[in-house]
Amino acid sequence: MNWKTLSSEYISRHRYFTARKDKCEAPGDKIIEQYYVVELPTTACALAITESGEAVLVKQYRHPVEEVLLELPGGFIDENELPVTAMARGLLEETGYEFSSVE
Image (cartoon, rainbow, N blue to C red; front, side):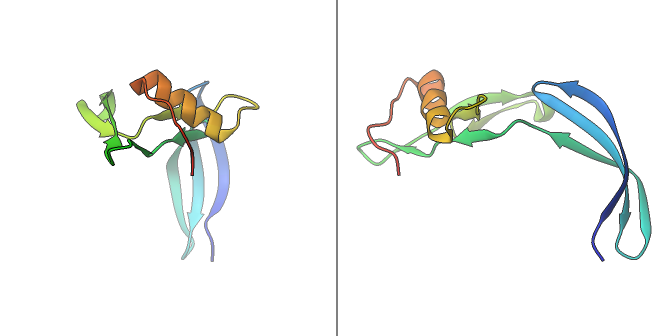
């Protein structure tokens, strides 16, 4: 048996953070009264390698863990934007690097 969503209620509808509370039926007829789901816009990240073979990463503060993390540069894909365009934009905005080619 697959999971089944019995009901959904949105608790936040923000452009960058949409969250809902689902009531689900799990295998074995187990009912999960509060199953929280976060919906995010589609994103694109770049694993950018310099000509000298080094990976380009960014340091980002992430409030939920209260730490600065090392991450791939990237971000949300704008409406009608190609993923490769979003990756290139994110790389340039966050690091100053531009792609010479993309694979």
